[in-house]
Image 1: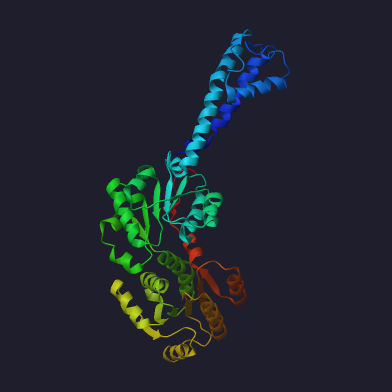
Image 2 (image 1 turned 180 degrees about the horizontal axis):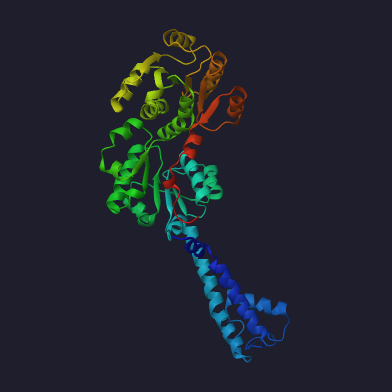
Length: 420
Protein backbone atom coordinates (compact mmCIF):
# COMPACT_ATOMS: atom_id res chain seq x y z
CA UNK A 1 0.00 0.00 0.00
CA UNK A 2 1.58 3.31 -1.10
CA UNK A 3 1.24 6.77 0.42
CA UNK A 4 -1.51 7.81 -2.01
CA UNK A 5 -3.64 4.84 -0.94
CA UNK A 6 -3.19 5.79 2.71
CA UNK A 7 -4.27 9.37 2.12
CA UNK A 8 -7.28 8.22 0.13
CA UNK A 9 -8.28 5.90 2.95
CA UNK A 10 -8.03 8.72 5.47
CA UNK A 11 -9.84 11.31 3.31
CA UNK A 12 -13.03 12.53 5.10
CA UNK A 13 -15.50 11.46 2.43
CA UNK A 14 -18.58 11.96 4.61
CA UNK A 15 -17.65 15.49 5.57
CA UNK A 16 -16.83 16.32 1.95
CA UNK A 17 -20.15 14.81 0.81
CA UNK A 18 -22.11 16.77 3.39
CA UNK A 19 -20.40 19.98 2.34
CA UNK A 20 -21.08 19.24 -1.35
CA UNK A 21 -24.82 18.59 -0.86
CA UNK A 22 -25.20 21.67 1.34
CA UNK A 23 -23.49 23.90 -1.25
CA UNK A 24 -25.49 22.25 -4.07
CA UNK A 25 -28.79 23.04 -2.34
CA UNK A 26 -27.70 26.55 -1.46
CA UNK A 27 -26.54 27.18 -5.04
CA UNK A 28 -29.84 25.82 -6.37
CA UNK A 29 -31.90 28.17 -4.20
CA UNK A 30 -29.60 31.12 -4.94
CA UNK A 31 -29.90 30.53 -8.71
CA UNK A 32 -33.65 31.13 -8.57
CA UNK A 33 -35.12 27.63 -8.21
CA UNK A 34 -38.38 27.58 -6.23
CA UNK A 35 -40.17 24.75 -4.40
CA UNK A 36 -43.88 23.94 -4.45
CA UNK A 37 -44.53 24.04 -0.69
CA UNK A 38 -42.42 27.03 0.34
CA UNK A 39 -42.80 30.16 -1.74
CA UNK A 40 -40.17 32.81 -1.60
CA UNK A 41 -37.08 30.73 -0.75
CA UNK A 42 -35.41 31.65 -4.05
CA UNK A 43 -35.73 35.34 -3.21
CA UNK A 44 -34.99 35.04 0.53
CA UNK A 45 -31.73 36.13 2.13
CA UNK A 46 -28.69 33.82 2.27
CA UNK A 47 -29.23 32.81 5.91
CA UNK A 48 -32.76 31.61 5.18
CA UNK A 49 -31.60 29.65 2.16
CA UNK A 50 -28.81 28.07 4.25
CA UNK A 51 -31.37 27.04 6.89
CA UNK A 52 -33.57 25.24 4.33
CA UNK A 53 -30.48 23.66 2.73
CA UNK A 54 -29.54 22.16 6.11
CA UNK A 55 -33.10 20.89 6.63
CA UNK A 56 -32.62 18.54 3.67
CA UNK A 57 -30.31 16.35 5.83
CA UNK A 58 -33.16 15.83 8.34
CA UNK A 59 -36.41 15.89 6.36
CA UNK A 60 -35.23 15.56 2.78
CA UNK A 61 -37.53 17.52 0.52
CA UNK A 62 -40.85 16.31 1.96
CA UNK A 63 -41.43 19.59 3.83
CA UNK A 64 -40.41 21.82 0.92
CA UNK A 65 -42.07 20.21 -2.07
CA UNK A 66 -40.46 19.60 -5.46
CA UNK A 67 -38.16 22.05 -7.24
CA UNK A 68 -39.43 24.08 -10.21
CA UNK A 69 -38.41 27.12 -12.19
CA UNK A 70 -34.98 28.67 -12.36
CA UNK A 71 -32.12 27.53 -14.57
CA UNK A 72 -31.60 23.86 -15.44
CA UNK A 73 -28.26 23.60 -13.59
CA UNK A 74 -29.94 24.98 -10.45
CA UNK A 75 -32.67 22.35 -10.55
CA UNK A 76 -30.08 19.61 -11.11
CA UNK A 77 -28.04 20.77 -8.09
CA UNK A 78 -31.15 20.97 -5.89
CA UNK A 79 -32.42 17.55 -6.97
CA UNK A 80 -28.92 16.09 -6.21
CA UNK A 81 -29.15 17.56 -2.71
CA UNK A 82 -32.74 16.26 -2.34
CA UNK A 83 -31.54 12.69 -2.86
CA UNK A 84 -27.98 12.86 -1.52
CA UNK A 85 -28.43 14.72 1.77
CA UNK A 86 -30.96 12.34 3.42
CA UNK A 87 -29.11 9.27 2.13
CA UNK A 88 -25.84 10.56 3.59
CA UNK A 89 -27.51 11.41 6.91
CA UNK A 90 -29.14 7.97 7.12
CA UNK A 91 -25.90 6.13 6.32
CA UNK A 92 -24.02 8.16 8.93
CA UNK A 93 -26.62 7.30 11.55
CA UNK A 94 -26.52 3.63 10.57
CA UNK A 95 -22.73 3.49 10.81
CA UNK A 96 -22.80 5.18 14.20
CA UNK A 97 -25.28 2.56 15.37
CA UNK A 98 -23.02 -0.23 14.12
CA UNK A 99 -20.06 1.25 15.95
CA UNK A 100 -22.05 1.45 19.17
CA UNK A 101 -23.36 -2.12 18.92
CA UNK A 102 -20.18 -3.81 17.61
CA UNK A 103 -17.22 -1.41 17.92
CA UNK A 104 -14.51 -4.05 17.55
CA UNK A 105 -16.02 -5.57 14.43
CA UNK A 106 -16.34 -2.12 12.92
CA UNK A 107 -12.67 -1.35 13.57
CA UNK A 108 -11.55 -4.56 11.88
CA UNK A 109 -13.91 -4.38 8.92
CA UNK A 110 -11.65 -2.73 6.34
CA UNK A 111 -8.16 -3.67 7.48
CA UNK A 112 -5.52 -3.76 4.76
CA UNK A 113 -1.77 -3.19 4.71
CA UNK A 114 -1.72 -3.10 8.50
CA UNK A 115 0.57 -4.22 11.29
CA UNK A 116 -0.70 -6.59 13.99
CA UNK A 117 1.00 -6.41 17.39
CA UNK A 118 0.00 -9.08 19.90
CA UNK A 119 0.53 -8.07 23.51
CA UNK A 120 -0.08 -4.82 25.37
CA UNK A 121 3.08 -4.68 27.47
CA UNK A 122 6.27 -2.63 27.51
CA UNK A 123 7.74 -4.50 24.55
CA UNK A 124 4.78 -3.58 22.35
CA UNK A 125 5.04 0.05 23.44
CA UNK A 126 8.75 0.07 22.63
CA UNK A 127 8.17 -1.41 19.19
CA UNK A 128 5.38 1.03 18.34
CA UNK A 129 7.45 4.03 19.42
CA UNK A 130 10.13 2.97 16.95
CA UNK A 131 7.59 2.11 14.24
CA UNK A 132 5.90 5.50 14.49
CA UNK A 133 9.23 7.28 14.04
CA UNK A 134 9.73 5.43 10.75
CA UNK A 135 6.17 4.82 9.54
CA UNK A 136 3.69 7.21 11.17
CA UNK A 137 0.74 6.32 8.92
CA UNK A 138 0.73 2.51 8.90
CA UNK A 139 -2.52 1.15 10.45
CA UNK A 140 -1.73 -0.79 13.63
CA UNK A 141 -3.90 -3.25 15.54
CA UNK A 142 -2.84 -4.14 19.10
CA UNK A 143 -4.33 -7.41 20.32
CA UNK A 144 -4.70 -8.17 24.02
CA UNK A 145 -6.27 -11.26 25.51
CA UNK A 146 -7.38 -9.39 28.63
CA UNK A 147 -8.58 -5.80 28.89
CA UNK A 148 -5.56 -3.54 29.68
CA UNK A 149 -5.77 -0.59 32.05
CA UNK A 150 -7.42 2.42 30.47
CA UNK A 151 -4.20 4.43 30.73
CA UNK A 152 -2.41 1.83 28.61
CA UNK A 153 -5.25 1.80 26.08
CA UNK A 154 -5.06 5.60 25.88
CA UNK A 155 -1.30 5.48 25.30
CA UNK A 156 -1.73 3.02 22.44
CA UNK A 157 -4.69 4.75 20.83
CA UNK A 158 -3.95 8.44 21.45
CA UNK A 159 -0.18 8.48 21.76
CA UNK A 160 0.70 5.84 19.16
CA UNK A 161 -2.39 5.92 16.93
CA UNK A 162 -3.09 2.20 17.23
CA UNK A 163 -6.40 0.38 17.63
CA UNK A 164 -6.67 -1.92 20.65
CA UNK A 165 -8.88 -5.02 20.33
CA UNK A 166 -9.53 -7.95 22.64
CA UNK A 167 -9.23 -11.52 21.40
CA UNK A 168 -7.47 -14.87 21.54
CA UNK A 169 -4.77 -15.22 18.89
CA UNK A 170 -4.94 -19.01 19.05
CA UNK A 171 -8.52 -18.98 17.67
CA UNK A 172 -8.59 -19.17 13.90
CA UNK A 173 -11.94 -17.36 13.68
CA UNK A 174 -10.52 -14.33 15.49
CA UNK A 175 -7.39 -14.34 13.32
CA UNK A 176 -9.56 -14.24 10.21
CA UNK A 177 -11.30 -11.15 11.62
CA UNK A 178 -7.88 -9.48 11.72
CA UNK A 179 -7.46 -10.15 7.97
CA UNK A 180 -4.02 -11.61 8.62
CA UNK A 181 -3.57 -12.47 4.95
CA UNK A 182 -3.50 -8.71 4.20
CA UNK A 183 -1.22 -7.75 7.11
CA UNK A 184 2.24 -6.40 6.32
CA UNK A 185 3.76 -7.59 9.62
CA UNK A 186 2.55 -9.68 12.54
CA UNK A 187 4.52 -9.35 15.78
CA UNK A 188 3.74 -11.82 18.55
CA UNK A 189 5.16 -9.89 21.51
CA UNK A 190 3.33 -11.37 24.49
CA UNK A 191 5.19 -13.04 27.36
CA UNK A 192 3.46 -16.38 26.80
CA UNK A 193 5.96 -18.08 24.49
CA UNK A 194 3.97 -21.26 23.91
CA UNK A 195 0.86 -19.33 22.83
CA UNK A 196 2.96 -17.23 20.47
CA UNK A 197 4.39 -20.33 18.78
CA UNK A 198 0.89 -21.84 18.68
CA UNK A 199 -0.49 -18.69 17.01
CA UNK A 200 2.35 -18.72 14.48
CA UNK A 201 1.62 -22.36 13.67
CA UNK A 202 -2.06 -21.56 13.07
CA UNK A 203 -1.18 -18.56 10.92
CA UNK A 204 1.19 -20.59 8.74
CA UNK A 205 -1.51 -23.21 8.31
CA UNK A 206 -4.02 -20.50 7.31
CA UNK A 207 -1.67 -18.58 4.98
CA UNK A 208 1.28 -20.79 3.92
CA UNK A 209 3.56 -17.94 2.79
CA UNK A 210 3.02 -15.72 5.83
CA UNK A 211 6.00 -16.95 7.88
CA UNK A 212 8.37 -14.27 6.59
CA UNK A 213 6.00 -11.61 7.94
CA UNK A 214 5.81 -13.07 11.48
CA UNK A 215 8.07 -12.05 14.36
CA UNK A 216 7.92 -14.15 17.54
CA UNK A 217 9.13 -12.92 20.90
CA UNK A 218 10.16 -15.83 23.13
CA UNK A 219 10.41 -14.77 26.75
CA UNK A 220 12.40 -17.86 27.77
CA UNK A 221 15.82 -18.39 26.23
CA UNK A 222 15.90 -22.12 26.95
CA UNK A 223 12.58 -22.61 25.20
CA UNK A 224 13.67 -20.50 22.21
CA UNK A 225 16.87 -22.49 21.83
CA UNK A 226 15.01 -25.78 22.15
CA UNK A 227 12.54 -24.72 19.42
CA UNK A 228 15.20 -23.60 16.92
CA UNK A 229 14.87 -26.70 14.74
CA UNK A 230 11.06 -26.57 14.46
CA UNK A 231 9.25 -25.59 11.27
CA UNK A 232 7.65 -22.56 12.95
CA UNK A 233 10.97 -21.17 14.21
CA UNK A 234 12.64 -21.69 10.85
CA UNK A 235 9.76 -20.05 8.99
CA UNK A 236 9.47 -16.99 11.26
CA UNK A 237 11.80 -14.45 12.84
CA UNK A 238 12.29 -15.32 16.53
CA UNK A 239 14.00 -13.24 19.19
CA UNK A 240 14.38 -12.65 22.91
CA UNK A 241 14.46 -9.13 24.37
CA UNK A 242 17.49 -9.86 26.54
CA UNK A 243 19.34 -11.27 23.55
CA UNK A 244 18.49 -8.17 21.51
CA UNK A 245 19.64 -5.89 24.33
CA UNK A 246 22.81 -7.85 25.12
CA UNK A 247 23.96 -8.09 21.52
CA UNK A 248 23.60 -4.32 21.16
CA UNK A 249 25.51 -3.70 24.39
CA UNK A 250 28.41 -5.94 23.36
CA UNK A 251 28.69 -4.47 19.87
CA UNK A 252 28.42 -0.79 20.79
CA UNK A 253 29.96 -0.54 24.27
CA UNK A 254 32.20 -3.50 25.04
CA UNK A 255 33.89 -4.23 21.70
CA UNK A 256 35.23 -0.65 21.33
CA UNK A 257 36.60 -0.89 24.88
CA UNK A 258 38.39 -4.16 24.06
CA UNK A 259 39.96 -2.64 20.95
CA UNK A 260 41.32 0.32 22.91
CA UNK A 261 43.13 -1.84 25.47
CA UNK A 262 46.38 -3.60 24.62
CA UNK A 263 46.14 -6.74 26.75
CA UNK A 264 43.31 -9.22 26.95
CA UNK A 265 40.46 -8.17 29.18
CA UNK A 266 38.79 -9.44 32.33
CA UNK A 267 35.00 -9.37 32.24
CA UNK A 268 32.93 -9.73 35.41
CA UNK A 269 29.28 -10.59 34.80
CA UNK A 270 27.33 -10.03 38.02
CA UNK A 271 23.95 -11.62 37.42
CA UNK A 272 23.73 -14.68 35.19
CA UNK A 273 20.08 -14.74 34.21
CA UNK A 274 18.85 -14.30 30.65
CA UNK A 275 20.69 -11.00 30.22
CA UNK A 276 24.00 -12.22 31.62
CA UNK A 277 23.87 -15.45 29.62
CA UNK A 278 23.31 -13.64 26.36
CA UNK A 279 26.14 -11.21 27.10
CA UNK A 280 28.51 -14.16 27.51
CA UNK A 281 27.13 -15.77 24.37
CA UNK A 282 27.75 -12.58 22.37
CA UNK A 283 31.22 -12.18 23.86
CA UNK A 284 32.12 -15.70 22.78
CA UNK A 285 30.76 -15.02 19.31
CA UNK A 286 32.36 -11.63 18.67
CA UNK A 287 35.21 -11.06 21.15
CA UNK A 288 36.69 -14.43 22.11
CA UNK A 289 40.22 -13.31 21.17
CA UNK A 290 39.93 -10.31 23.51
CA UNK A 291 39.06 -12.28 26.66
CA UNK A 292 41.49 -13.49 29.28
CA UNK A 293 39.01 -14.25 32.10
CA UNK A 294 35.26 -14.19 32.57
CA UNK A 295 33.97 -14.22 36.14
CA UNK A 296 30.33 -15.06 36.80
CA UNK A 297 28.65 -13.97 40.04
CA UNK A 298 25.15 -15.16 40.85
CA UNK A 299 23.15 -16.77 43.58
CA UNK A 300 23.05 -20.46 42.68
CA UNK A 301 25.61 -19.66 39.98
CA UNK A 302 26.90 -23.20 39.41
CA UNK A 303 23.43 -24.51 38.62
CA UNK A 304 22.73 -21.62 36.28
CA UNK A 305 25.99 -22.18 34.46
CA UNK A 306 25.19 -25.88 34.06
CA UNK A 307 21.76 -25.03 32.65
CA UNK A 308 23.26 -22.51 30.24
CA UNK A 309 25.87 -25.04 29.16
CA UNK A 310 23.10 -27.37 28.02
CA UNK A 311 21.96 -24.74 25.51
CA UNK A 312 25.22 -23.11 24.41
CA UNK A 313 28.77 -24.43 24.17
CA UNK A 314 31.23 -22.63 26.45
CA UNK A 315 34.47 -21.82 24.68
CA UNK A 316 37.81 -22.98 26.06
CA UNK A 317 39.58 -19.90 24.74
CA UNK A 318 39.46 -18.05 28.04
CA UNK A 319 39.52 -18.71 31.80
CA UNK A 320 36.12 -18.98 33.45
CA UNK A 321 35.47 -18.56 37.17
CA UNK A 322 32.10 -19.03 38.86
CA UNK A 323 31.15 -17.51 42.22
CA UNK A 324 28.01 -18.45 44.15
CA UNK A 325 26.71 -15.51 46.12
CA UNK A 326 24.98 -12.16 46.23
CA UNK A 327 26.70 -9.15 44.63
CA UNK A 328 25.95 -7.25 47.85
CA UNK A 329 28.08 -9.65 49.90
CA UNK A 330 31.69 -8.43 50.40
CA UNK A 331 32.97 -12.00 50.67
CA UNK A 332 32.14 -12.67 47.02
CA UNK A 333 34.24 -9.72 45.86
CA UNK A 334 37.08 -10.61 48.26
CA UNK A 335 37.32 -14.09 46.75
CA UNK A 336 37.21 -12.70 43.23
CA UNK A 337 40.03 -10.23 43.95
CA UNK A 338 42.19 -12.97 45.45
CA UNK A 339 41.71 -15.41 42.59
CA UNK A 340 41.69 -13.03 39.59
CA UNK A 341 44.55 -10.54 39.66
CA UNK A 342 43.50 -7.18 38.19
CA UNK A 343 45.50 -4.06 37.53
CA UNK A 344 45.26 -1.65 40.43
CA UNK A 345 43.24 0.96 38.56
CA UNK A 346 41.07 -1.60 36.79
CA UNK A 347 42.38 -1.14 33.26
CA UNK A 348 41.49 -4.06 30.99
CA UNK A 349 38.52 -4.83 33.25
CA UNK A 350 34.82 -4.62 32.44
CA UNK A 351 32.14 -5.02 35.11
CA UNK A 352 28.55 -5.71 34.08
CA UNK A 353 26.11 -5.34 36.98
CA UNK A 354 23.13 -7.05 35.36
CA UNK A 355 21.01 -8.51 38.14
CA UNK A 356 17.28 -7.88 38.34
CA UNK A 357 17.81 -5.70 41.45
CA UNK A 358 18.37 -2.21 40.07
CA UNK A 359 19.32 -0.58 43.39
CA UNK A 360 22.01 -3.20 44.05
CA UNK A 361 23.35 -2.77 40.53
CA UNK A 362 23.74 0.99 40.90
CA UNK A 363 25.16 0.89 44.42
CA UNK A 364 27.70 -1.82 43.52
CA UNK A 365 28.67 0.07 40.37
CA UNK A 366 29.58 3.12 42.48
CA UNK A 367 31.65 0.95 44.83
CA UNK A 368 33.53 -0.61 41.88
CA UNK A 369 34.17 2.83 40.36
CA UNK A 370 35.82 4.02 43.58
CA UNK A 371 37.97 0.89 43.74
CA UNK A 372 38.83 0.64 40.03
CA UNK A 373 38.76 4.17 38.55
CA UNK A 374 39.86 3.09 35.03
CA UNK A 375 37.52 0.11 34.62
CA UNK A 376 34.42 0.08 32.43
CA UNK A 377 31.44 -0.25 34.76
CA UNK A 378 27.97 -1.01 33.36
CA UNK A 379 24.83 -0.99 35.51
CA UNK A 380 21.54 -2.36 34.21
CA UNK A 381 17.96 -1.27 34.88
CA UNK A 382 14.71 -2.39 33.30
CA UNK A 383 13.38 1.06 32.37
CA UNK A 384 15.23 4.21 31.50
CA UNK A 385 15.89 6.20 34.67
CA UNK A 386 16.68 9.91 34.75
CA UNK A 387 18.21 9.62 38.20
CA UNK A 388 20.40 6.65 37.26
CA UNK A 389 21.51 8.53 34.15
CA UNK A 390 22.54 11.53 36.25
CA UNK A 391 24.51 9.28 38.64
CA UNK A 392 26.19 7.57 35.70
CA UNK A 393 27.20 10.93 34.19
CA UNK A 394 28.60 12.18 37.51
CA UNK A 395 30.67 9.05 38.19
CA UNK A 396 31.65 7.91 34.69
CA UNK A 397 29.42 4.86 34.68
CA UNK A 398 27.42 3.36 31.83
CA UNK A 399 23.78 3.02 32.84
CA UNK A 400 21.70 0.96 30.44
CA UNK A 401 18.06 -0.05 30.43
CA UNK A 402 16.69 -3.15 28.74
CA UNK A 403 13.82 -1.19 27.17
CA UNK A 404 16.16 1.45 25.77
CA UNK A 405 18.56 -1.13 24.33
CA UNK A 406 15.67 -3.00 22.73
CA UNK A 407 14.30 0.17 21.12
CA UNK A 408 17.74 1.12 19.81
CA UNK A 409 18.36 -2.30 18.26
CA UNK A 410 15.00 -3.30 16.81
CA UNK A 411 15.87 -4.65 13.33
CA UNK A 412 15.24 -2.28 10.46
CA UNK A 413 13.17 -4.90 8.62
CA UNK A 414 10.54 -4.78 11.39
CA UNK A 415 9.79 -1.09 10.90
CA UNK A 416 10.62 -0.34 7.25
CA UNK A 417 7.18 -1.36 6.02
CA UNK A 418 4.34 0.45 4.35
CA UNK A 419 4.14 4.17 3.60
CA UNK A 420 6.32 6.76 5.31
